Image 1 (cartoon, rainbow over the protein chains, first blue to last red):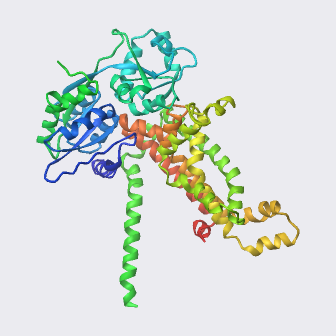
Image 2: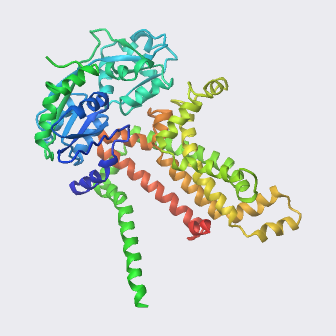
Image 3: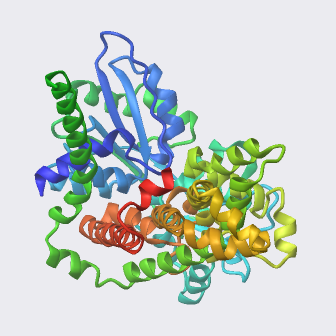
Length: 254
Length: 267
Protein backbone atom coordinates (compact mmCIF):
# COMPACT_ATOMS: atom_id res chain seq x y z
CA UNK A 1 0.00 0.00 0.00
CA UNK A 2 2.68 2.49 1.05
CA UNK A 3 4.92 1.80 -1.92
CA UNK A 4 2.17 2.15 -4.48
CA UNK A 5 0.85 5.24 -2.75
CA UNK A 6 4.23 6.91 -2.78
CA UNK A 7 4.58 6.07 -6.44
CA UNK A 8 1.15 7.46 -7.29
CA UNK A 9 1.95 10.53 -5.27
CA UNK A 10 5.24 11.07 -7.03
CA UNK A 11 3.51 10.80 -10.38
CA UNK A 12 0.59 12.93 -9.30
CA UNK A 13 2.16 15.87 -7.55
CA UNK A 14 3.50 18.03 -10.36
CA UNK A 15 0.11 18.08 -12.05
CA UNK A 16 -2.14 16.87 -9.30
CA UNK A 17 -4.81 19.43 -8.46
CA UNK A 18 -7.12 19.02 -11.40
CA UNK A 19 -9.45 21.71 -10.25
CA UNK A 20 -7.71 24.94 -11.05
CA UNK A 21 -4.16 25.32 -9.92
CA UNK A 22 -1.62 28.00 -10.37
CA UNK A 23 2.00 27.21 -9.84
CA UNK A 24 4.12 30.25 -9.45
CA UNK A 25 7.81 29.60 -9.52
CA UNK A 26 10.11 32.44 -8.68
CA UNK A 27 13.28 30.39 -8.81
CA UNK A 28 15.66 33.02 -7.43
CA UNK A 29 19.06 31.43 -6.99
CA UNK A 30 20.25 30.46 -3.51
CA UNK A 31 16.95 30.90 -1.67
CA UNK A 32 15.32 27.73 -0.39
CA UNK A 33 12.22 26.65 -2.23
CA UNK A 34 9.06 26.39 -0.19
CA UNK A 35 6.18 24.26 -1.45
CA UNK A 36 2.81 25.40 -0.14
CA UNK A 37 -0.42 23.44 -0.62
CA UNK A 38 -3.22 25.90 0.01
CA UNK A 39 -6.99 26.14 -0.16
CA UNK A 40 -8.27 27.47 -3.48
CA UNK A 41 -9.89 30.41 -1.66
CA UNK A 42 -6.44 31.58 -0.49
CA UNK A 43 -5.08 32.04 -4.01
CA UNK A 44 -5.29 35.84 -4.24
CA UNK A 45 -3.98 36.43 -0.72
CA UNK A 46 -1.09 33.96 -1.01
CA UNK A 47 0.02 35.13 -4.44
CA UNK A 48 0.16 38.59 -2.93
CA UNK A 49 2.10 37.30 0.10
CA UNK A 50 4.52 35.06 -1.85
CA UNK A 51 6.84 37.73 -3.32
CA UNK A 52 6.82 39.64 0.00
CA UNK A 53 7.95 36.61 1.99
CA UNK A 54 11.73 36.70 2.14
CA UNK A 55 12.50 33.41 3.88
CA UNK A 56 12.24 31.41 0.66
CA UNK A 57 10.85 31.31 -2.84
CA UNK A 58 7.29 30.12 -2.29
CA UNK A 59 5.71 27.81 -4.84
CA UNK A 60 1.96 27.36 -4.49
CA UNK A 61 -0.49 24.62 -5.34
CA UNK A 62 -4.13 25.65 -4.95
CA UNK A 63 -7.00 23.16 -4.83
CA UNK A 64 -9.82 22.08 -2.55
CA UNK A 65 -8.44 21.66 0.99
CA UNK A 66 -9.82 18.11 1.04
CA UNK A 67 -7.97 17.16 -2.16
CA UNK A 68 -4.73 18.56 -0.74
CA UNK A 69 -5.24 16.61 2.50
CA UNK A 70 -5.82 13.45 0.44
CA UNK A 71 -2.55 14.06 -1.39
CA UNK A 72 -0.68 14.39 1.91
CA UNK A 73 -2.25 11.11 3.08
CA UNK A 74 -1.00 9.51 -0.15
CA UNK A 75 2.57 10.53 0.57
CA UNK A 76 2.87 13.97 -1.04
CA UNK A 77 5.09 16.19 1.13
CA UNK A 78 4.65 19.91 0.66
CA UNK A 79 6.26 22.12 3.32
CA UNK A 80 3.09 23.96 4.35
CA UNK A 81 -0.56 22.88 4.30
CA UNK A 82 -3.06 25.74 4.60
CA UNK A 83 -6.75 24.78 4.68
CA UNK A 84 -10.07 26.60 4.68
CA UNK A 85 -10.96 24.70 7.82
CA UNK A 86 -9.42 23.89 11.16
CA UNK A 87 -10.84 20.38 11.11
CA UNK A 88 -8.88 19.04 8.10
CA UNK A 89 -5.41 20.05 9.41
CA UNK A 90 -6.35 18.88 12.91
CA UNK A 91 -7.23 15.47 11.51
CA UNK A 92 -3.87 15.27 9.69
CA UNK A 93 -2.18 16.32 12.96
CA UNK A 94 -3.87 13.45 14.80
CA UNK A 95 -2.66 11.10 12.06
CA UNK A 96 0.89 12.36 12.62
CA UNK A 97 1.19 13.84 9.13
CA UNK A 98 1.51 17.52 10.03
CA UNK A 99 2.74 19.52 13.03
CA UNK A 100 0.23 21.25 15.29
CA UNK A 101 -1.98 23.51 13.12
CA UNK A 102 -2.28 27.25 13.73
CA UNK A 103 -5.45 29.22 13.08
CA UNK A 104 -4.51 32.23 10.95
CA UNK A 105 -7.60 33.75 9.33
CA UNK A 106 -11.35 34.01 9.41
CA UNK A 107 -13.73 34.35 6.52
CA UNK A 108 -17.49 34.61 6.05
CA UNK A 109 -19.78 32.27 4.19
CA UNK A 110 -22.06 34.39 2.00
CA UNK A 111 -24.61 33.99 -0.75
CA UNK A 112 -23.03 35.03 -4.04
CA UNK A 113 -25.18 36.08 -6.99
CA UNK A 114 -24.53 37.72 -10.37
CA UNK A 115 -24.47 41.51 -9.94
CA UNK A 116 -27.86 42.00 -11.62
CA UNK A 117 -29.67 39.25 -9.70
CA UNK A 118 -32.98 39.84 -7.92
CA UNK A 119 -32.13 37.28 -5.22
CA UNK A 120 -32.12 38.94 -1.84
CA UNK A 121 -31.72 36.36 0.90
CA UNK A 122 -31.78 32.77 2.08
CA UNK A 123 -35.52 32.53 1.45
CA UNK A 124 -35.00 33.09 -2.30
CA UNK A 125 -32.60 30.16 -2.59
CA UNK A 126 -35.41 27.67 -2.12
CA UNK A 127 -37.69 29.28 -4.68
CA UNK A 128 -38.55 27.06 -7.63
CA UNK A 129 -36.40 27.58 -10.71
CA UNK A 130 -33.40 28.95 -8.81
CA UNK A 131 -30.29 27.05 -9.90
CA UNK A 132 -27.68 26.71 -7.17
CA UNK A 133 -24.00 25.78 -7.35
CA UNK A 134 -22.38 24.76 -4.07
CA UNK A 135 -19.22 23.03 -2.91
CA UNK A 136 -19.15 19.23 -2.59
CA UNK A 137 -19.58 17.97 0.98
CA UNK A 138 -15.89 17.03 1.30
CA UNK A 139 -14.50 20.47 0.47
CA UNK A 140 -14.72 23.01 3.35
CA UNK A 141 -17.00 25.46 1.50
CA UNK A 142 -19.45 22.60 0.97
CA UNK A 143 -19.20 21.48 4.59
CA UNK A 144 -19.94 25.05 5.77
CA UNK A 145 -22.88 25.16 3.38
CA UNK A 146 -24.28 21.99 4.95
CA UNK A 147 -23.72 23.53 8.38
CA UNK A 148 -25.74 26.57 7.31
CA UNK A 149 -28.52 24.37 5.91
CA UNK A 150 -28.59 22.45 9.18
CA UNK A 151 -29.65 25.63 10.95
CA UNK A 152 -32.68 26.13 8.70
CA UNK A 153 -36.09 24.55 9.07
CA UNK A 154 -36.43 21.16 7.42
CA UNK A 155 -38.83 22.52 4.80
CA UNK A 156 -36.54 25.33 3.77
CA UNK A 157 -33.51 23.02 3.80
CA UNK A 158 -35.22 20.53 1.50
CA UNK A 159 -36.33 23.27 -0.88
CA UNK A 160 -32.76 24.59 -1.15
CA UNK A 161 -31.21 21.14 -1.58
CA UNK A 162 -33.68 20.42 -4.37
CA UNK A 163 -32.34 23.48 -6.22
CA UNK A 164 -28.70 22.38 -6.05
CA UNK A 165 -27.60 21.76 -9.63
CA UNK A 166 -23.90 21.15 -9.10
CA UNK A 167 -21.53 20.19 -6.30
CA UNK A 168 -18.19 21.65 -7.30
CA UNK A 169 -14.79 20.37 -6.11
CA UNK A 170 -13.60 23.82 -5.01
CA UNK A 171 -14.65 27.47 -4.78
CA UNK A 172 -13.37 28.34 -8.25
CA UNK A 173 -15.89 25.87 -9.68
CA UNK A 174 -18.72 27.73 -7.95
CA UNK A 175 -17.33 31.12 -9.00
CA UNK A 176 -17.09 29.94 -12.61
CA UNK A 177 -20.69 28.70 -12.71
CA UNK A 178 -21.86 32.08 -11.37
CA UNK A 179 -19.75 34.35 -13.58
CA UNK A 180 -20.80 32.33 -16.65
CA UNK A 181 -24.45 32.84 -15.78
CA UNK A 182 -24.96 29.08 -15.48
CA UNK A 183 -26.10 29.25 -11.86
CA UNK A 184 -28.37 31.85 -10.24
CA UNK A 185 -26.72 31.73 -6.83
CA UNK A 186 -24.00 29.95 -4.92
CA UNK A 187 -22.51 29.76 -1.46
CA UNK A 188 -18.98 31.11 -1.30
CA UNK A 189 -16.61 32.97 0.97
CA UNK A 190 -16.86 36.76 1.09
CA UNK A 191 -13.26 36.96 -0.22
CA UNK A 192 -14.13 34.93 -3.35
CA UNK A 193 -16.76 37.47 -4.32
CA UNK A 194 -14.32 40.34 -3.78
CA UNK A 195 -11.76 38.48 -5.89
CA UNK A 196 -13.84 38.60 -9.09
CA UNK A 197 -14.50 42.33 -8.99
CA UNK A 198 -17.92 43.71 -9.75
CA UNK A 199 -19.42 40.73 -11.57
CA UNK A 200 -20.77 39.09 -8.45
CA UNK A 201 -22.65 40.53 -5.50
CA UNK A 202 -22.55 39.41 -1.87
CA UNK A 203 -25.63 38.76 0.20
CA UNK A 204 -24.72 38.45 3.87
CA UNK A 205 -26.20 35.64 5.92
CA UNK A 206 -27.92 36.51 9.19
CA UNK A 207 -25.53 36.16 12.14
CA UNK A 208 -27.42 33.23 13.70
CA UNK A 209 -27.12 31.14 10.50
CA UNK A 210 -23.52 31.95 9.72
CA UNK A 211 -21.09 29.08 10.27
CA UNK A 212 -17.72 29.87 11.79
CA UNK A 213 -15.20 29.83 8.93
CA UNK A 214 -11.62 29.57 10.17
CA UNK A 215 -8.43 28.80 8.25
CA UNK A 216 -5.53 26.86 9.75
CA UNK A 217 -2.04 26.08 8.50
CA UNK A 218 0.53 23.52 9.56
CA UNK A 219 4.09 22.52 8.77
CA UNK A 220 3.99 19.13 7.09
CA UNK A 221 5.94 16.34 8.82
CA UNK A 222 8.91 15.47 6.66
CA UNK A 223 8.95 18.93 5.04
CA UNK A 224 12.17 19.69 3.14
CA UNK A 225 12.23 23.27 4.47
CA UNK A 226 10.69 23.13 7.96
CA UNK A 227 12.37 26.38 9.09
CA UNK A 228 11.11 28.39 6.13
CA UNK A 229 7.71 26.72 6.52
CA UNK A 230 7.46 27.93 10.12
CA UNK A 231 8.54 31.41 9.07
CA UNK A 232 5.89 31.40 6.34
CA UNK A 233 3.16 30.54 8.85
CA UNK A 234 4.49 33.13 11.33
CA UNK A 235 4.19 35.72 8.58
CA UNK A 236 0.51 34.84 8.24
CA UNK A 237 -0.05 35.73 11.89
CA UNK A 238 1.97 38.92 12.06
CA UNK A 239 3.75 40.28 9.04
CA UNK A 240 3.36 40.55 5.29
CA UNK A 241 1.11 37.47 5.16
CA UNK A 242 -1.33 38.95 7.63
CA UNK A 243 -1.38 42.19 5.64
CA UNK A 244 -1.98 40.30 2.37
CA UNK A 245 -4.82 38.34 3.95
CA UNK A 246 -6.43 41.54 5.20
CA UNK A 247 -6.07 43.14 1.76
CA UNK A 248 -7.93 40.18 0.30
CA UNK A 249 -10.73 40.63 2.83
CA UNK A 250 -9.83 37.99 5.41
CA UNK A 251 -10.16 38.77 9.09
CA UNK A 252 -7.19 38.03 11.34
CA UNK A 253 -7.83 36.10 14.54
CA UNK A 254 -7.66 38.18 17.70
CA UNK B 1 24.95 -7.84 -38.61
CA UNK B 2 26.71 -7.04 -35.31
CA UNK B 3 26.34 -3.35 -36.17
CA UNK B 4 22.57 -3.75 -35.94
CA UNK B 5 22.64 -5.53 -32.62
CA UNK B 6 23.08 -2.40 -30.45
CA UNK B 7 20.23 -0.77 -32.30
CA UNK B 8 17.97 -3.73 -31.60
CA UNK B 9 18.96 -3.44 -27.96
CA UNK B 10 17.97 0.24 -27.97
CA UNK B 11 14.61 -0.62 -29.53
CA UNK B 12 13.90 -3.38 -27.02
CA UNK B 13 14.95 -1.20 -24.08
CA UNK B 14 12.75 1.67 -25.30
CA UNK B 15 9.74 -0.56 -25.67
CA UNK B 16 10.44 -2.04 -22.23
CA UNK B 17 10.57 1.41 -20.62
CA UNK B 18 7.40 2.48 -22.41
CA UNK B 19 5.55 -0.70 -21.39
CA UNK B 20 6.52 -0.42 -17.72
CA UNK B 21 5.70 3.28 -17.60
CA UNK B 22 2.32 2.86 -19.29
CA UNK B 23 1.11 -0.20 -17.40
CA UNK B 24 2.47 0.59 -13.92
CA UNK B 25 -0.25 3.05 -12.80
CA UNK B 26 -3.00 0.77 -14.10
CA UNK B 27 -1.56 -2.26 -12.33
CA UNK B 28 -1.15 -0.19 -9.14
CA UNK B 29 -4.89 0.51 -9.09
CA UNK B 30 -5.57 -3.20 -8.74
CA UNK B 31 -2.68 -3.92 -6.38
CA UNK B 32 -3.22 -1.04 -3.95
CA UNK B 33 -6.54 -2.33 -2.68
CA UNK B 34 -7.40 -6.05 -2.60
CA UNK B 35 -10.18 -7.40 -4.82
CA UNK B 36 -12.43 -7.87 -1.78
CA UNK B 37 -12.01 -4.25 -0.75
CA UNK B 38 -12.66 -3.11 -4.30
CA UNK B 39 -15.87 -5.09 -4.66
CA UNK B 40 -17.25 -4.07 -1.26
CA UNK B 41 -16.63 -0.38 -1.86
CA UNK B 42 -18.55 -0.65 -5.12
CA UNK B 43 -21.57 -1.46 -2.99
CA UNK B 44 -22.31 2.26 -2.99
CA UNK B 45 -25.40 3.56 -4.77
CA UNK B 46 -23.53 6.75 -5.70
CA UNK B 47 -20.79 4.81 -7.47
CA UNK B 48 -23.27 2.64 -9.34
CA UNK B 49 -25.29 5.71 -10.39
CA UNK B 50 -22.11 7.32 -11.70
CA UNK B 51 -21.20 4.22 -13.70
CA UNK B 52 -24.70 3.95 -15.11
CA UNK B 53 -24.65 7.62 -16.08
CA UNK B 54 -21.25 7.15 -17.72
CA UNK B 55 -22.52 4.22 -19.77
CA UNK B 56 -25.67 6.06 -20.86
CA UNK B 57 -24.02 9.34 -21.77
CA UNK B 58 -21.09 7.74 -23.59
CA UNK B 59 -23.45 5.49 -25.54
CA UNK B 60 -25.56 8.43 -26.70
CA UNK B 61 -22.47 10.51 -27.49
CA UNK B 62 -20.98 7.62 -29.48
CA UNK B 63 -24.21 7.16 -31.45
CA UNK B 64 -24.19 10.87 -32.37
CA UNK B 65 -20.53 10.69 -33.32
CA UNK B 66 -21.08 7.65 -35.59
CA UNK B 67 -24.14 9.08 -37.32
CA UNK B 68 -22.60 12.49 -38.05
CA UNK B 69 -18.95 11.51 -38.13
CA UNK B 70 -19.08 8.66 -40.65
CA UNK B 71 -20.47 10.66 -43.61
CA UNK B 72 -18.31 13.65 -42.63
CA UNK B 73 -15.19 11.48 -42.64
CA UNK B 74 -16.20 9.98 -46.01
CA UNK B 75 -16.46 13.45 -47.51
CA UNK B 76 -13.06 14.45 -46.11
CA UNK B 77 -11.49 11.21 -47.36
CA UNK B 78 -12.92 11.09 -50.88
CA UNK B 79 -13.46 14.61 -52.18
CA UNK B 80 -11.10 17.46 -52.70
CA UNK B 81 -12.64 20.87 -52.19
CA UNK B 82 -11.41 24.31 -51.25
CA UNK B 83 -10.83 24.55 -47.54
CA UNK B 84 -10.50 20.80 -47.06
CA UNK B 85 -7.22 21.09 -45.15
CA UNK B 86 -8.75 23.78 -42.99
CA UNK B 87 -11.78 21.59 -42.32
CA UNK B 88 -9.53 18.69 -41.31
CA UNK B 89 -7.53 20.94 -38.99
CA UNK B 90 -10.69 22.33 -37.39
CA UNK B 91 -12.07 18.85 -36.83
CA UNK B 92 -8.81 17.84 -35.15
CA UNK B 93 -8.58 20.96 -32.99
CA UNK B 94 -10.46 19.55 -29.96
CA UNK B 95 -7.74 16.87 -29.74
CA UNK B 96 -5.19 19.42 -28.61
CA UNK B 97 -7.48 21.77 -26.68
CA UNK B 98 -7.31 21.19 -22.91
CA UNK B 99 -10.63 19.70 -21.72
CA UNK B 100 -11.29 22.49 -19.22
CA UNK B 101 -10.88 24.98 -22.08
CA UNK B 102 -13.39 22.94 -24.08
CA UNK B 103 -15.80 23.29 -21.15
CA UNK B 104 -15.28 27.05 -20.96
CA UNK B 105 -15.73 27.29 -24.72
CA UNK B 106 -18.98 25.34 -24.57
CA UNK B 107 -20.23 27.63 -21.78
CA UNK B 108 -19.30 30.69 -23.82
CA UNK B 109 -21.02 29.24 -26.90
CA UNK B 110 -24.16 27.46 -25.71
CA UNK B 111 -24.29 28.26 -21.98
CA UNK B 112 -27.12 30.44 -20.66
CA UNK B 113 -25.04 33.62 -21.06
CA UNK B 114 -23.22 32.41 -24.19
CA UNK B 115 -23.31 33.46 -27.84
CA UNK B 116 -26.07 31.02 -28.74
CA UNK B 117 -27.51 30.89 -25.22
CA UNK B 118 -30.81 32.49 -26.18
CA UNK B 119 -31.23 30.28 -29.24
CA UNK B 120 -30.58 27.18 -27.16
CA UNK B 121 -33.06 28.31 -24.51
CA UNK B 122 -35.77 29.22 -27.02
CA UNK B 123 -35.36 25.79 -28.59
CA UNK B 124 -36.40 24.47 -25.18
CA UNK B 125 -32.98 22.91 -24.61
CA UNK B 126 -31.30 22.95 -21.24
CA UNK B 127 -27.67 21.91 -21.27
CA UNK B 128 -25.80 23.25 -18.24
CA UNK B 129 -26.41 21.13 -15.10
CA UNK B 130 -28.28 18.59 -17.26
CA UNK B 131 -27.42 15.13 -18.53
CA UNK B 132 -27.83 16.53 -22.05
CA UNK B 133 -24.96 18.88 -21.28
CA UNK B 134 -22.76 15.93 -20.35
CA UNK B 135 -23.54 14.32 -23.73
CA UNK B 136 -22.63 17.58 -25.50
CA UNK B 137 -19.30 17.80 -23.65
CA UNK B 138 -18.46 14.14 -24.37
CA UNK B 139 -19.39 14.47 -28.04
CA UNK B 140 -17.22 17.56 -28.37
CA UNK B 141 -14.07 16.02 -26.92
CA UNK B 142 -14.47 12.52 -28.38
CA UNK B 143 -15.66 13.05 -31.96
CA UNK B 144 -12.27 13.99 -33.45
CA UNK B 145 -10.88 10.63 -32.37
CA UNK B 146 -13.49 8.88 -34.50
CA UNK B 147 -13.56 11.24 -37.48
CA UNK B 148 -9.78 11.17 -37.85
CA UNK B 149 -9.61 7.40 -37.74
CA UNK B 150 -12.63 6.98 -40.02
CA UNK B 151 -11.14 9.37 -42.56
CA UNK B 152 -7.90 7.36 -42.55
CA UNK B 153 -9.83 4.09 -42.89
CA UNK B 154 -11.85 5.37 -45.88
CA UNK B 155 -8.72 6.84 -47.43
CA UNK B 156 -6.96 3.48 -47.25
CA UNK B 157 -9.64 1.60 -49.20
CA UNK B 158 -8.63 0.15 -52.58
CA UNK B 159 -9.73 2.66 -55.25
CA UNK B 160 -10.47 -0.31 -57.55
CA UNK B 161 -13.18 -1.48 -55.12
CA UNK B 162 -15.02 1.80 -55.44
CA UNK B 163 -14.50 1.88 -59.22
CA UNK B 164 -15.89 -1.60 -59.60
CA UNK B 165 -18.95 -0.59 -57.61
CA UNK B 166 -19.44 2.49 -59.76
CA UNK B 167 -18.93 0.54 -62.99
CA UNK B 168 -21.66 -1.81 -61.88
CA UNK B 169 -24.00 1.17 -61.69
CA UNK B 170 -24.11 1.84 -57.96
CA UNK B 171 -24.48 5.49 -56.95
CA UNK B 172 -22.17 7.05 -54.36
CA UNK B 173 -24.63 6.57 -51.53
CA UNK B 174 -24.91 2.89 -52.32
CA UNK B 175 -21.16 2.50 -52.72
CA UNK B 176 -20.67 4.24 -49.37
CA UNK B 177 -23.17 2.04 -47.55
CA UNK B 178 -22.52 -1.32 -49.23
CA UNK B 179 -18.83 -1.21 -50.09
CA UNK B 180 -16.96 1.50 -48.22
CA UNK B 181 -18.40 1.11 -44.72
CA UNK B 182 -18.16 -2.72 -44.60
CA UNK B 183 -14.63 -2.71 -45.99
CA UNK B 184 -13.45 0.06 -43.69
CA UNK B 185 -15.18 -1.49 -40.71
CA UNK B 186 -12.05 -2.48 -38.76
CA UNK B 187 -10.77 1.09 -38.92
CA UNK B 188 -14.18 2.53 -38.10
CA UNK B 189 -14.48 0.25 -35.09
CA UNK B 190 -11.03 1.22 -33.90
CA UNK B 191 -11.99 4.88 -34.17
CA UNK B 192 -15.24 4.25 -32.32
CA UNK B 193 -13.33 2.47 -29.55
CA UNK B 194 -10.91 5.38 -29.19
CA UNK B 195 -13.76 7.89 -29.10
CA UNK B 196 -15.66 5.80 -26.59
CA UNK B 197 -12.60 5.48 -24.37
CA UNK B 198 -11.99 9.23 -24.53
CA UNK B 199 -15.63 9.94 -23.68
CA UNK B 200 -15.57 7.49 -20.79
CA UNK B 201 -12.55 9.23 -19.28
CA UNK B 202 -13.81 12.77 -19.87
CA UNK B 203 -13.45 14.98 -16.81
CA UNK B 204 -12.63 18.66 -17.33
CA UNK B 205 -15.13 19.66 -20.00
CA UNK B 206 -17.95 17.87 -18.19
CA UNK B 207 -17.16 19.50 -14.84
CA UNK B 208 -16.79 23.00 -16.26
CA UNK B 209 -19.74 22.85 -18.66
CA UNK B 210 -22.27 20.53 -17.03
CA UNK B 211 -21.25 20.54 -13.36
CA UNK B 212 -21.21 17.61 -10.97
CA UNK B 213 -24.37 16.26 -9.36
CA UNK B 214 -24.98 12.62 -8.46
CA UNK B 215 -27.31 10.86 -10.89
CA UNK B 216 -27.57 13.87 -13.22
CA UNK B 217 -24.14 15.06 -14.32
CA UNK B 218 -21.68 13.19 -12.10
CA UNK B 219 -20.06 10.65 -14.42
CA UNK B 220 -17.62 8.02 -13.13
CA UNK B 221 -14.48 10.20 -13.48
CA UNK B 222 -16.17 13.04 -11.54
CA UNK B 223 -17.28 10.56 -8.87
CA UNK B 224 -13.69 9.32 -8.64
CA UNK B 225 -12.40 12.84 -8.10
CA UNK B 226 -14.99 13.52 -5.42
CA UNK B 227 -14.09 10.32 -3.59
CA UNK B 228 -10.37 10.95 -3.81
CA UNK B 229 -10.60 13.32 -0.86
CA UNK B 230 -12.87 11.26 1.36
CA UNK B 231 -12.43 7.62 0.52
CA UNK B 232 -9.35 6.66 -1.47
CA UNK B 233 -10.34 2.99 -1.66
CA UNK B 234 -13.70 3.89 -3.18
CA UNK B 235 -11.89 6.07 -5.71
CA UNK B 236 -9.59 3.14 -6.53
CA UNK B 237 -12.56 0.77 -6.88
CA UNK B 238 -14.32 3.01 -9.38
CA UNK B 239 -11.03 3.54 -11.20
CA UNK B 240 -10.58 -0.22 -11.43
CA UNK B 241 -14.00 -0.58 -13.03
CA UNK B 242 -13.15 2.09 -15.60
CA UNK B 243 -9.81 0.44 -16.38
CA UNK B 244 -11.51 -2.93 -16.79
CA UNK B 245 -14.28 -1.48 -18.98
CA UNK B 246 -11.79 0.35 -21.17
CA UNK B 247 -9.60 -2.73 -21.52
CA UNK B 248 -12.64 -4.85 -22.36
CA UNK B 249 -13.80 -2.55 -25.15
CA UNK B 250 -10.30 -2.34 -26.61
CA UNK B 251 -9.92 -6.11 -26.51
CA UNK B 252 -13.43 -6.64 -27.90
CA UNK B 253 -12.74 -4.44 -30.88
CA UNK B 254 -9.42 -6.16 -31.54
CA UNK B 255 -11.00 -9.61 -31.41
CA UNK B 256 -13.98 -8.57 -33.55
CA UNK B 257 -11.88 -7.18 -36.35
CA UNK B 258 -8.65 -9.15 -36.28
CA UNK B 259 -5.48 -8.28 -34.46
CA UNK B 260 -4.29 -5.80 -37.07
CA UNK B 261 -7.12 -3.35 -36.37
CA UNK B 262 -5.05 -0.34 -35.47
CA UNK B 263 -2.29 -1.14 -37.96
CA UNK B 264 -4.74 -1.34 -40.87
CA UNK B 265 -6.32 1.98 -40.12
CA UNK B 266 -2.99 3.76 -40.00
CA UNK B 267 -2.01 2.45 -43.44
